[in-house]
Every structure is written in structure tokens, then in C-alpha cells.
Image (cartoon, rainbow, N blue to C red; front, side, top):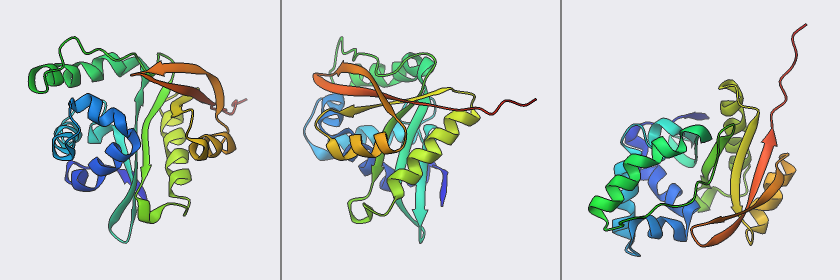
Length: 191
């Protein structure tokens, strides 16, 4: 079952967000200490109105356990959602003048993090979460669903291609090179 996340899901979802972000999570926390990284993302997951908020997250539940999550939002809202996050990083994590490139844009519903617990991978949970993300964007009236994938993540790249995402271009983001992939939503015309 997939449902909207709740603040109480933090202990399960935060490790999934960090897993999906990889090295980027440490760059945001300005630390390689797992406890500091977890503390940062727990803070923001449980808060409202930021890109990593529970408000922007769906979870995959099986037998009352969170086995996966997807974090997504309107690309046009990125700078607004990111502002609180960057202000917090400057004040509490000593990241002054830290302003990562925008990873999304206006006109796109952006799938930020997609992650499945390591013990549950290979069971179709990632695919179900991606479909839910596409449907979420479609319900909000978006024609384009976008995401970034590291160029060396062949497994994820293959999955996204199978699901209908097309590589639109390459993007530099926080020192890494990514493919910017887009899924075009087909709306039925009503006659």
C-alpha cells in the first residue's frame, strides 16, 4: 500500500532519503558523520513547507513496515521550498554562501528521492513508487515528470527508461554529472 507520509514515519523514511542521496546528503550536512546527517534530514522531514518534508513524501507500506519512499514536488516551488533548508544549513551547519544549482524547473513535477529498503529491493516497490509519483504529478495537472539520475547508476537508468522516462539532457549538480530524465504525461481529451 502506498500512502502519504506522516511525521511519525521519520525513523523509517530518513534513512531512505539519505540512501537515495548518497554523498549529497553529507554535502548538505557539511559532515560525513551519519548521526549529524540523520539529524538534519529528520529535522526537515518532520517540518512543513520544505523539499524534504513529509508533506512531499509518499511511503510504501507492507505488513505495517515502511519499505520505500518517494519525495516529490512542483519544480516551480523548488527555490521557495529550498530557502528554509539553506537558511538552516547556513545557521547550524556553517554552510555560508551554499547555493546548489536548481535540479528541477518550472513546468515539471520533480521526483527528488526514490528509495527502497535494501532488504526489499527487487520486488517491484521502486516501480510502484515511481508510478505513484507519476500519478501524483498528473493529479496536480503536470505534463512533465522529471528526475535526475547519476550517470553511473545503470540499474536506475534502465528502470526509468523501461517506465517511459527519456533523457532530456545532462546536468551538473553539486559536483556530479547526472542525466535529467522526463516522463511526459498523456491526458485523455474529453469530447
